Length: 529
Image (cartoon, rainbow, N blue to C red; front, top):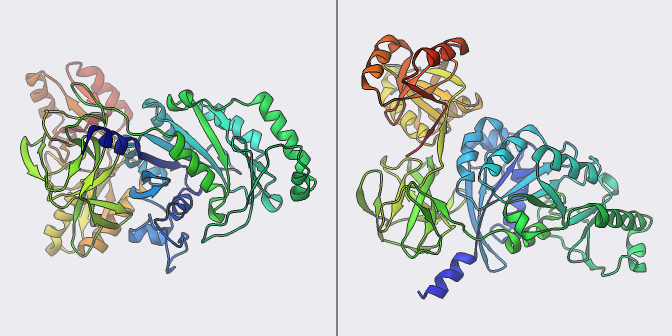
């Protein structure tokens, strides 16, 4: 492959994540994007328990039962000659750290907002993560087929709470039962609303001049309201600026109704046109350009049992530079050894296919036999270790007890594999043989119990623990560390990577220990390496 061909392949990639507050319609929008991208022919809606169809991106049993996304999914499709990698993130706030890791693997993000509720708490938190990395975002204001906030109020809410400029790219005509469609401000097109929950419905009218009487024929008395809105926007709103968008300062805004497949196509058209191609990634030693010839990639997620029949574990690897070729040999940097990548796969949710070649921006799956961790780097030549993927201090703890002692080995295997995924952390106290689970959100414990039962045949129950939080213990003073371990042995554990962790019972104890041991650092986040 020539250099020009390789560069063209890189520039065709668009890798983005979808984020939102729960119930804003993120999973439904994901389905409709796949529908427009030709990846599926019939959108499945998220239905109640025992429904026969569920969202393509929700494949776990607990996701199907509860109608929520609790794990990240990767979906690849081709749209307008672009290779699109879509990462659907967990919609529940208890899984924010999984979402954070996904956001380290994307080049841009799509934020979904409920038009009736505006910016909600989880959206704000995830936007903070995007801002840390200057991730460009596109905003989709959803559920215009229902009564909601006035569009200008939504824009003001986004600007105030997300601290980003809004550049409206489309504008709604009415809402709820009076919703007639949207006017594309840049293409000068009128898209008329027609409800369809399972297929694509297009009805576009080109209106180059808003004074055109055709607008009155189509919209009736709503035509003058549209003219007034557009006149106001032209004087008051910020025009779209590609550079400001790419810096994460400005967000283009679209309006629509994902469940009715409306407004999705114009948003997707803009995404492949304006969203960035793969960008440089940071390592401990230097920046890596996607246009470099040597292959490199980083694992940002591990998923167990995507195929329950084979009890497999898949490591999700973001290609950062170079061209992946099936069977190529690369160096697993943490272990310091060479491996051959025979059976890498690409995804449509849980469906997969073998991949012969892939390029920067693509997400490939590597079969993991217990040797790969989140944060691991793979390179073809140079010793590079990618950075920016952390563990977060848990806020909730539970002790694990098995119902049947004969299942102890299955329990150990299940906990080891499920906690590799990073949503729940496994700790082993220094002075006990307990299994202690730590999580940022308590729903994660329900997921662990359900998956132990469904995927490993282990019935277990959890008991509350008295610990408040966790802090990773780091020091260069070996003598101080020895004294600290002896004094606090009842409050110390090792995480799955062998790091020492301090588990205080309350905030006062944590603060006091910080003051009493200045030689030791107590970290709230730990860089995965």
